[in-house]
Image (cartoon, rainbow, N blue to C red):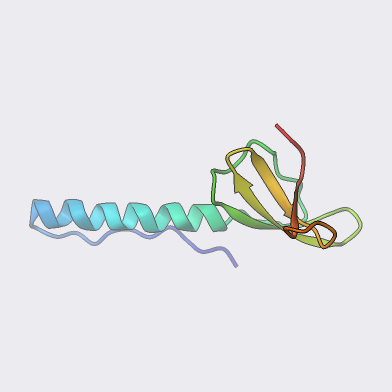
Length: 90
């Protein structure tokens, strides 16, 4: 089930309204970062920003955890010492 975007409540104080809007913008950025839809659809390697995490299902039915780094997406991998490998370099 998708998490819907949140709307900031309306308040009369302009300074408080600005602060609340910023908090809601940050919450919605997190929602967008983790709410990417179907895990079985291949995602573009250029999508996302550093720090994003997603679950991906490959064509064989296996699931992987992927994390976005400044160098590209890394994928969970039980054979490497770090537990992750680069999915493919951009």
